[in-house]
Image (cartoon, rainbow, N blue to C red; front, side):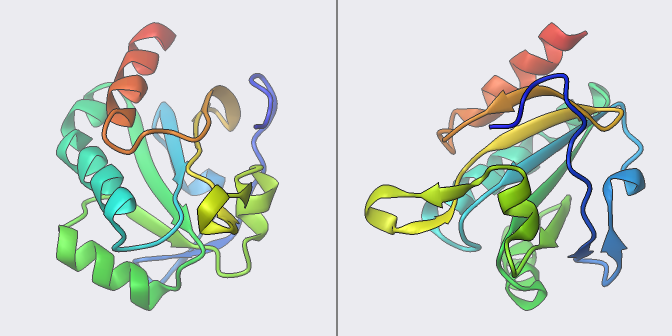
Length: 150
């Protein structure tokens, strides 16, 4: 995991709105970047739905959420439509950003790929990290961390 207090790696990735996005495009007090292995898989769907259900709470806390995987935009569109997601998914098909955020590696029986890691940023600086998160419980960790950061 990247170190708390360090500047987060920038990126330029395709988003669901058919535009390229970088860190500077996200203006909220906090930016939650979560990395996940695959669209429409059980754990990833649970995690996305938990973020989605709690999006109003996160926004009230000054946070914005983006999800990043190496799935393409077509796959993200299916995922977004099926789950009615209200936050941005970004596509990193070559895993450059995923690797820059140290979220690529050995997934045990699932082989090598994107790890389920999350970063909270403030003004482009890493303020909290979460490694190998539990999809169902992770939202509570995020909300508690945001409370502590205030």
